[in-house]
Length: 109
Image 1 (cartoon, rainbow, N blue to C red):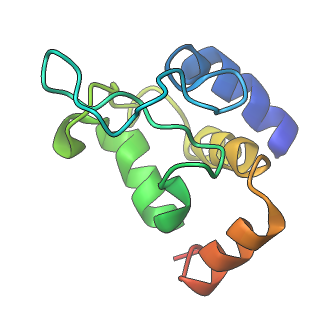
Image 2: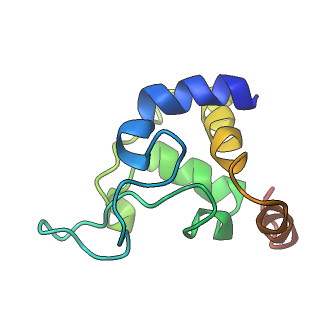
């Protein structure tokens, strides 16, 4: 799934979140001139791991607008399996402690 996710991520996510999900903006919590929040790193160094799978899928489906960002909605652009694979790809950058905390917080919900 991680390999499939890499292809999906590189094609649809990397231009904003970085090729290794590292983010492209150092201060991702600082609003941009247009008032939106920049795309956060997804590699475990930001807050993505605080959200359960259902929330990660919701953000992918709805896009960033409901959360103060500019990410487009992917509900009609990607299959569920592609979305899950992209998540598995960026989770592959999380260290074991981060992943375990995510699980303990109900991450698979």
